[in-house]
Amino acid sequence: MREINSNLYSARPSQILYLGVFSCVLFILISSINHSFGYYIQPFFYLTFYWFYYKALDKHNLVFAVFLFSAYLGEIFLLTDVDKYFDIVLVTFLIAVTAMLYTFIPILKIRPRKITKEMVLQPIIGVVFCVYTVMYLMSMYYNTVPNKFLFVFGGIFLLIFTLVCFLIPLRNRHPSNVYLYLIGGGLLIESILSFVYTYSMPMPIIATGVKIAICVHKTCVAIYFVKIEKIRTDVDYDEY
Image 1 (tube, helix red, strand yellow):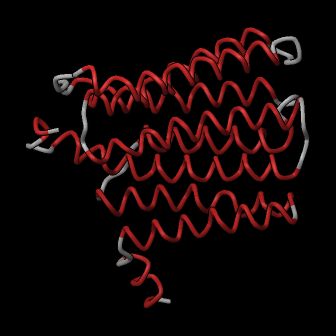
Image 2 (cartoon, one colour):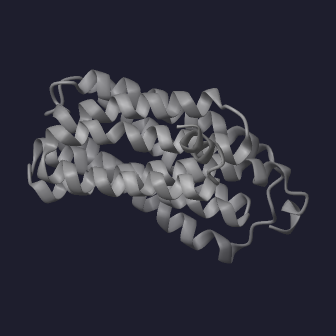
Image 3 (cartoon, rainbow, N blue to C red):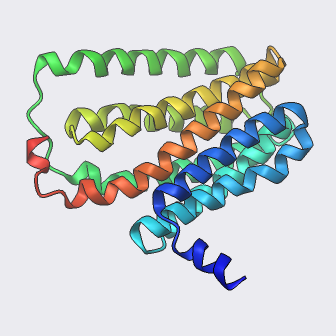
């Protein structure tokens, strides 16, 4: 028992990250076969990702813990029944997004690089796509959802979050900011597929797509929370 505890304590952050990814894959596969049993697997990758953060930086992070807990709680109800637990899903979503936006504040304070016309094209395409997708989603399901105020408020929050994720790499080209595209895109896909599955096409493949988006999003968030420390303290950030 002492040897096992010693091995757990000495585990490298990369090993813990791989364990978290493995837990995600296991969650996707098992929950696709037995939905109920998937609930027992889901907490493992949330706990593992927090363990990864702690081992990588040797400190706790209350904001990251709040993000993981609220995301986990919301996604349990999301995967169970979005319509039945609509308010809980939206409130926990808003808490998780707020925690992420709070984390972005130090990055937004970094002096932006000089932006040229050539650099703006791809972000503009991404912004247009995000705005169109969110607005289309809101118009399509507005009359179906049980709480229209929370739906509109959540849609605006989703749009703001996604735009921030796409615009930060434009201001700061640090290599680690590439994870923001996956974070914003992952949450956007997770939200879209959840509503499509609940209100339009309750197909198993769409439910699996939701779970994949959840896992990609959480993996990238965990990595980015660690990378943020590098972005904030990188003395060469002016080169980016």
